[in-house]
Image 1 (cartoon, rainbow, N blue to C red):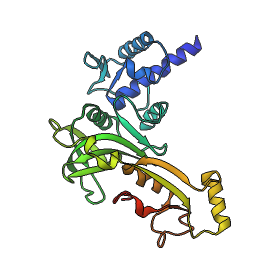
Image 2 (tube, rainbow, N blue to C red):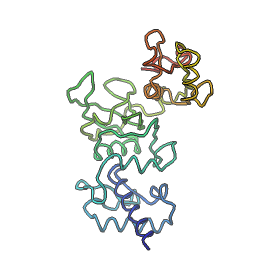
Image 3 (cartoon, one colour):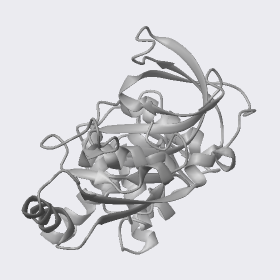
Image 4 (tube, rainbow, N blue to C red):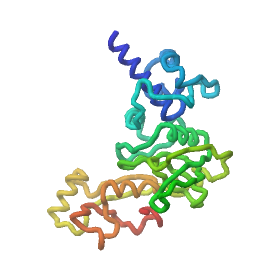
Length: 277
C-alpha cells in the first residue's frame, strides 16, 4: 500500500510540474513519463484538480487540464530544477509534447514558470510572442517580437531559439533575461524550417591542444576520449558553440593556448561561417 501511495504522490507532483512549466497536462503527456494504465492517469489528474481547484481547469481542446491565472505551487516548490528533473526522465531527443530540446549539460537557470509556460505554448502552437528582454548590448529592459521554436540547455543556462523581428534573424535568448511574455497576434515571422543553422548538422572533433607535449596529450586523450584520438559530437550548427564553451576548446590556436585550453577544435576553418559565434 505504501508503494502505491508513494507512486500516486509522485504522479500528482508531476501533474503540477507540467501544469506550471508547460501550461497544460494531459493523459498522453503523462504516459510519456509514467508506465501506468491511462485510466489511472486520468484519475490522478482529476484528483489533483480536486486538491488544487484554483490551479487548473479542464479544457476539451487539450483533453486535459490547463493552468489558470491564479495558479500557485501546492505540492512542489515551483523551482525550475523540478521541471528539469522531470523532463530529464524522457529520451534525450527532446521534451516531446511537440517541443524540441537540445541538451548539452544538466544545470539550472533562474526562470519563472509563467513566462516559461507561455514560451512553451508558443512553440507548440507555432505562434510569435512579445517578450521583455535584457541583453549585454542593451541591458535596459526592452520589447522584442520573436517566434520561438526550440529550447537549448547549455551548461548553466537555458535559451530559447527564435526568429527575432528586430534582428531580422534567428537568435538565442537567455531565459533568465526574459521578464515578461505577452501575446503578439498571428505569426508572420519565419518558423523553424527557415532556420538554416538549426537545420544544419555538423561534426565536432575535440582533440588535445597541439601545443601540449606527447605525454600531456596522452593524458588528455585518456581523460576526455577514453584513449581514442578525438571526442566527437554530431550536433546542430546552432548548438556547436555551446559544446565548445562547455569543454573550453580552443578555436584560435595562436591566442588560445594551454594551460587555459587543453582541447582544440580540429579543422575549425572547415565549418560554416558563424558556427562558433
